[in-house]
Image (cartoon, rainbow, N blue to C red):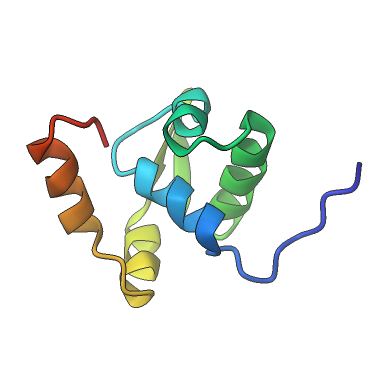
Length: 92
């Protein structure tokens, strides 16, 4: 199967994945939280890393300041999402 690169790395999948990475998270947890297949999460995170929007910490991944800035330019308030997750006891 051929994987074709997306012109817009921050389509709905990229945004969903980045929003789960506000704290260090495994790829398996990202897949579970987003409902995406693990292979799609791996490919998306790889492209996000290549763009400098995420980085790897051992087996965990986290959004970078550049990733937060990029989301906020698209109108997504990362600080608000993180605060809401904490308020409702949801692990970001």
